[in-house]
Image 1 (cartoon, rainbow, N blue to C red):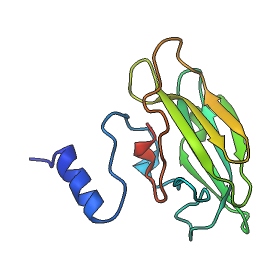
Image 2 (cartoon, one colour):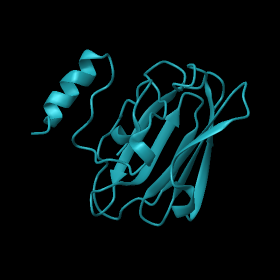
Image 3 (tube, one colour):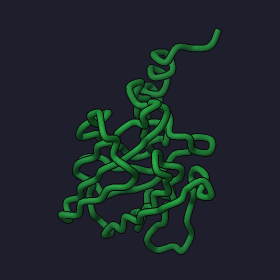
Image 4 (cartoon, one colour):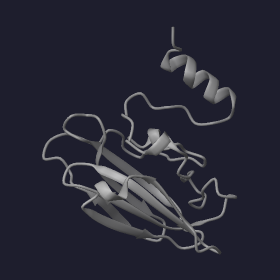
Length: 156
């Protein structure tokens, strides 16, 4: 018998990692690898040595996000989570070295099996959105706090 989501969350929390939010479905990303994240009042960082993220490129189709591409300051490398080839559009979020994301909301796809749309607002008075907002329905989560070492499956 496989462990329940509650058991998995308890194990993750015991390891000091954020819990899986059962209200948000998995974003179909390769291996659900960690994609970095933000914590209230802290810079947008990633697991790549906790260096600040320079940009996040969101790849999407008409109805869902398909991939996230991350680049860092002090480094020319990028990492991709998901499948860029499935995206028909992309939108780039550029961040200052210590810019903080203060508000995030995500909307599910109509089928409820992925992210259709994401909104972010930073302390640099930057408003960013990617994807297509569903005509009906409220965000899955308002003021979603994405934490450091946040895993892609928690995005939606």
